[in-house]
Length: 362
Image (cartoon, rainbow, N blue to C red):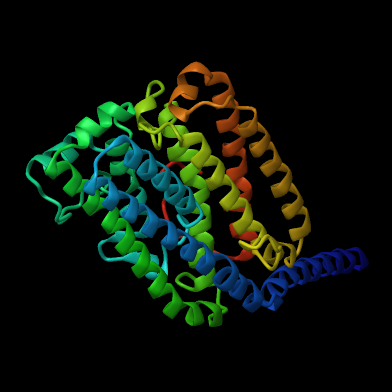
């Protein structure tokens, strides 16, 4: 009888310890003040990034206006450079597809960053002088369309290609749409910021949940689409498909990916455009039971990702997947390892559900 009482006592004690640990994890998550984190994301990261992108979108459109007025090599070079700077700035904004960035006609990313381009359909619209964009062919507009039209060939050949009213009408319409979509996004976010900052819940649909899910999606876009797709790692692919790379015609894919990776790192750490490290997702993680260990492991694996990326030769992605497949495979492997930390482990630790389907089982 005494032994039975002892066993029951031990089991009861262990149950209390288990419950205490669960309560510690739950209470630490709820105790973390998400207000400063959300304010930091809103005021020091999202809005300044959108403001920078808006300015560069205006510069791009003005460069295209000049190119339409005088279609020559000098203006083409300026338009190309403005496109590059605007597209690079966009890499720091492509995770903001919630709130004002998620509309009935598509997300901010879908409207401006869908790739690769459907060049045949672009030519059809040009021949029809159709600049209405009243369709769902998002890969015929945005940055991907300008990548094709502004970087189709060498300068002289591209100038000759653009020397036609219909073609320049289409280029101008695309740059104008990038400008208008971006301006509206910035304006809407300025109105949305206060509600984003004040809602401290974490359930599905809350600002924290929406932001976290888009953060993970932005990371997975690098792994699945910017790397895995041209490398031939997506379901149904048998080999590398270099034409699926982002910015195929300009060849700036690696530079753009570098910016995208930096954006992910800054979002995780809570680093603002001024370089200041404030409250971010990592601080939220560290506030939870066992979160310090997860944050350390996450950072260590991220270092492996960036090391593998920096080990890649200075070539466009569409060349790397063919000429340096071993190095690209190593980079893709490190990206795949990172998924666990950003997605499953972090989701569990923060008590935030993944509300989208990435379609790859991880």
